[in-house]
Length: 321
Image (tube, rainbow, N blue to C red):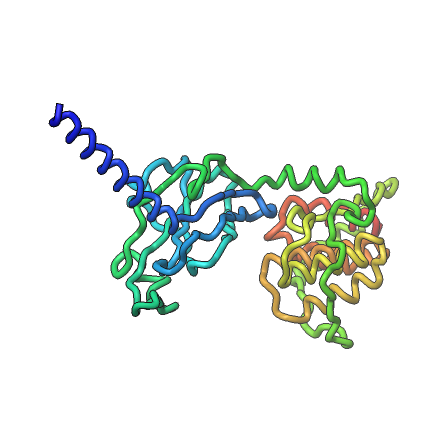
């Protein structure tokens, strides 16, 4: 009888000690993790900061094509981000539309003194030493610090949402806009000095095509907007281009659109954004009846947009004849 009581007491003591240790460890675990598509190119992961930050040196974000169910799966993966302990979100920019799952694991660091200050160096602890000098908390709890629902970017969903919007203040044409957009600063008054050129051979070929007789002019092409410009971006070159489109191009103010697009292209821009801006400039020439300049512009863009430019080149030639 005594032996049974002793065994029960030992078992109860063990359970209490394990529960206390687990409860203490979960104070350093993030909670309420969620992952949702935030744009046509990114997924934002959010969570609630750990109850205790005193012993933390970093938060490590992991990504996988299947749910994380144990710490063993974490050990086999490289992190996608290493963040400060008090961070509560991370935006992951993706190049595919696959479904991803995320986990956020705490890294425990050494304490500096009795007040539990941290040895933390932004250049070393966050980027490199979280896995050596610091220990990862071996806790993965689905639905707590690991997502149980996959997240993906969905461009088609974004596009359909924009097209179905009913409030004019929220949309324009095929695109969308902010309630209070950032200002676009036009810092150039002069025309840009760098204009794309085409070879003499291409010009002669265009002139030959222009001379061809056609019975009647076909209808002008409808306005074209690239998928990347259907949603308002966060900032940078893409937002400046977006603002020009929203303010002038979509409203069919093509003369003003030409001026602002030329000024925009007068400065160094990323190639992808510059190509799209050049295409919109070609469209603006096209819709103002300057088909010769439109043709020149579309001929310079045949490499990045071969099929699309072919249509606009043919239509510009039709309108010139």
